[in-house]
Image (cartoon, rainbow, N blue to C red; front, top):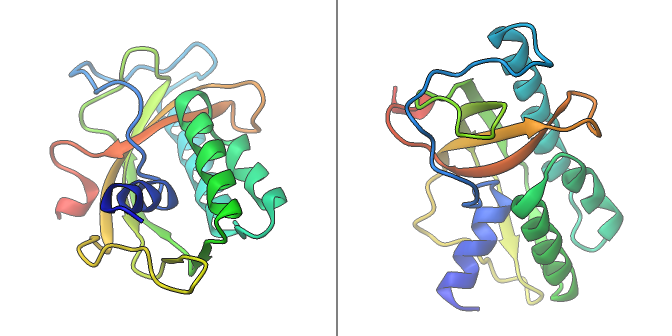
Length: 179
């Protein structure tokens, strides 16, 4: 496996795929379906927690376990998840351990155009390993155990929270992990 493929695998497994637009400096505003910023951020937090729970339940030998992950994503992130999980299943990869959310907060950069809300997270992947079919780890030794991520959400009537994850990428500026 090339270093690039290993990096891409790590990015998806840890929820750090780079998709979507860079955030602008505008202040977040609630979308029409949310009565306040607090309600929008609570829905985003519930969405991301459900997504991480779904990631932690993935068994690459059982494609049925991928569906809950797909249910919380949309757009390019959803397409990337579908492509990569299918390939990793076919190649016999295994995921060991769970990731966890250490903190969540409104993203300091605000909401990107088209996004309903944006969160920053401190995401702990120290207990996660990804193995190839021979049992060798695919995780780069330089992977940070705790990752600062920014998650962009859009409205989605198909989820119980009213939001879906459109993109996940590295956080910019001050992050929950900076402290």
